[in-house]
Length: 315
Image 1 (tube, rainbow, N blue to C red):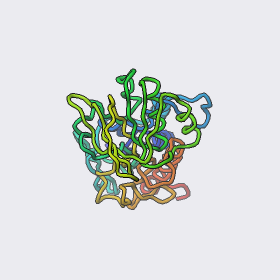
Image 2 (cartoon, rainbow, N blue to C red):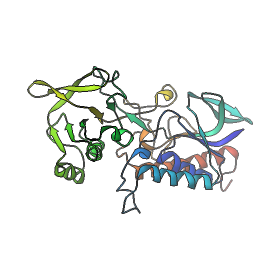
Image 3 (cartoon, one colour):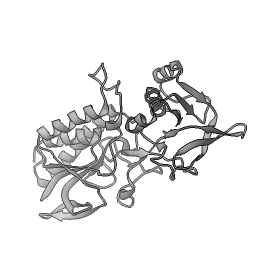
Image 4 (cartoon, rainbow, N blue to C red):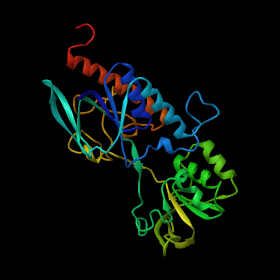
């Protein structure tokens, strides 16, 4: 079976692409990773998505997207993509997408693989992962009721994590390498007003210690060089994200950080492959911009497939 478009990734960009592609009559398959969850689906409170002034959680929003795509006939599959290579289908240029179990063939591909949390790479981080070191407050905050928690980071995601963790923990200490937060003003105001949250500025985590579980972290002041140890029950690391594009190296043009380079129509360096959402090089990574990317990528894929089939309007 040959698909018109295979979409890789089930976040807001991929699901929007599935809605637009399937609604346009393209035979559409969306491949959702078995190992990597959508960052949007794990968001506890989404306040800035248009049309929902009361806010909603990410899982609910992504579930609505999925049902809408299914309504228009998009197929879904849980699997992990290993590679993409050029192929042929009925004499037409196509792509073979290798999965864990088998391969599928498609005339076009939309990359919407998103990102994963960046790690600090410090002693103890790997050892205590899942034993006090976490990267998602929504997933794991409940384990820290009335506990002392550390959050590493200073952007929107880190402050949102701290605010969410403050609902559960006894105290949340946010450690940031600069002397002010990067987060948006409204999030900063909320964090500064929360009596459970305190801040340690100009400092970075340099080690995590414990026995069976985390017991403390060691931090270093980046200005004075002073080091000190802080007792804690858990650490949530929120220092940015890296694109899930390792499998695309040597296939598509990527920037130095691994983001897919596209033009304004989501076209990549390979004809017939498009990219959208957080995995592509862009200025703003938000659900609303991912949706716009996904719609554009699906439309570009549609035009490409119709031209390939000789069905382009006006021909």
